[in-house]
Length: 257
Ligand SMILES: NC(=O)c1ccc[n+]([C@@H]2O[C@H](COP(=O)([O-])OP(=O)(O)OC[C@H]3O[C@@H](n4cnc5c(N)ncnc54)[C@H](O)[C@@H]3O)[C@@H](O)[C@H]2O)c1
Image (tube, rainbow, N blue to C red):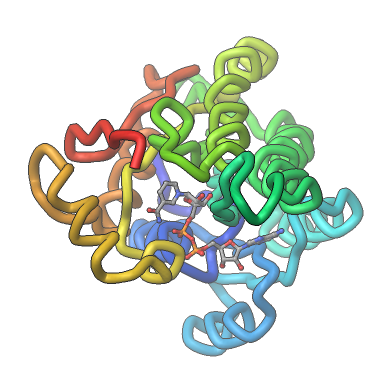
């Protein structure tokens, strides 16, 4: 799919990987709606970019009504939705059991709710708008959806039971959703990043980041958000890319700790 003049939704687009994606989509001439919980950042981004090409809507991806309202607002403002990039996510670390007690069940459910249920909630509702687009000989795709999994879907470290389960869910639902939506010419893929330098990762102590960097195959550094965004753009452009979970991690396979 060509990006110029198309309409994209980016959840979690107020920060990190999502924000880098928003910036590259705007450069390509797409109109973009950011769906994010963080009101202050949402307001600031809207002020920085103006409103012709960018909408910023405070949204909770876990809330059916909130997502439906944001999708309707995007559709009513820009007239269509062609691209959806799901980056909204949270990370919580806790061991299944430790001397402090068992993993807090409420925290476990929250991670699944945001990372997995929220991603599916947006995916299903955005598909309803994508089917309304035209599929032509020059442009077969009616829509392209890109979800964000994680290397933790495959090799979760200690303390990552909830996060890994949520991201394995995102990876696992990619193919069945691709099969569900293929008759409508809507593609879906997931990217499984290694560790990227975003506000989510910068919460880690310097020593933990250094240790992770030493375990990265090549290049020995964290990923940069524009590297994630450029893969998003490639997947959007490449019509043969469908039903795939692709790792973007410098060859990293993290050990238990
Ligand atoms: N940074 C990494 O190293 C890394 C690695 C693998 C996967 N990921 C995944 O990539 C995605 C983006 O991560 P990031 O590093 O850019 O994080 P980030 O914290 O910089 O950005 C996440 C954004 O999601 C938003 N958000 C959180 N809960 C939300 C909700 N319920 N509804 C709407 N928005 C919500 C936050 O407000 C924030 O703006 C996440 O799904 C994360 O799990 C990140």
